Length: 248
Image (cartoon, rainbow, N blue to C red; front, side, top):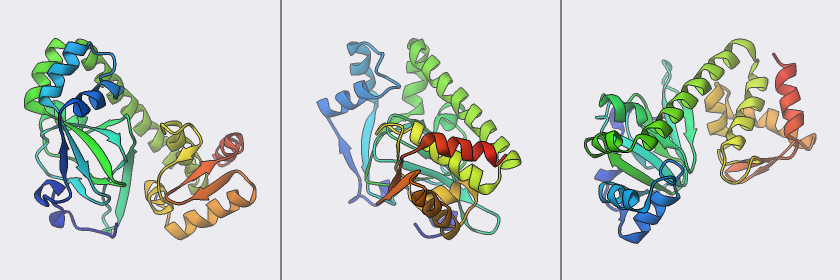
């Protein structure tokens, strides 16, 4: 997606044609299969399905914009979501990539305050939406879901702390290696696949697409990775780990 200005972003819901809501048993099945809710009993899933919406977004659709009302929690069922913002120079900065089985918008869910970043569909995606007005009362009666959500928040905080350390102690090529390994570990396709473009990966560490490609091509020649359309495959994770350690 090209550079954008926050004031120009609008949620895809206003577009109409690109957004379809999944209904019936399909919605329940998607809820039951999501890691955040898979431990719930059948009757609890049925109850939650009455609150939840599964919404489909096309690639590059804006799910929400920075400053929008924080109305609730979202979870990626399929596809992927890019969480980003604008730098002081007006460039896109990717703060996080949310993959299937992961949630986002949890801060706004808990405090009800405006969104702190933009969320954009990286691919055609199915997003589970739970409104705050429905989910907060539900959490009071489903402590296991609350504990899982707390674990998500803790993991997000640990990841943020690690990223700050990487900026302080690793050079850019070391950060690139570590970012690729981290994205692969979170992938539901196994710990070898990264489903993000070179531009998106570079934006996560402040590296241009050209510089990112140059380093990736070096690793391709060493047979550490293979580049595929829309992502890459890790062929030698141990070598990338050693590379990151050597670039402290």
